[in-house]
Length: 211
Image (cartoon, rainbow, N blue to C red; front, side, top):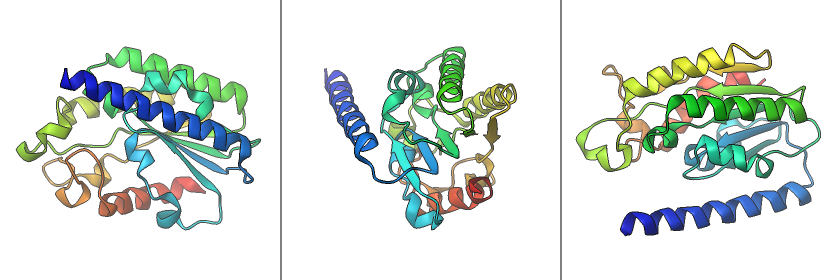
């Protein structure tokens, strides 16, 4: 019962944000150079503060998002006449919901093909799924996710990206891990989401891909 209530609440929150994004897409007075699309890790990313670039970077992340939801609502995340780059960070919630990797890859491929059709000159930067910290105190947030599974999925992501000229796989997993291969404690708030220090480390790894 409690789980269902939380699921219903999350669905309503996602719909609110989708509606907000669709409205902003129509009334925005700026054209985005770069779009960041994904789940809560993207939604909470302080992009302008950490990148400090003259380029217009727009955040289109939504909490709780999975690849299937993104595919169904892609129009809420894309706008502008000529987007230079799209950074796509998604997949950890698919793992958390035990979605089969083949289903996720099919969703990602459909997303890539849709973007390529509507934005043929846009580069897609497919980020690796970020590591988690599997420590006991983080188990509530991390749930069934494991770094071993994340690494396996990242390998599949890399293979998918290699099949498309306009897609580049961006390996950011290792820049966030400690010597044990876990998400660094100082980089996370709950074992899954990033702290400001975590976002700073991620941004440092992404800067070369921004230009």
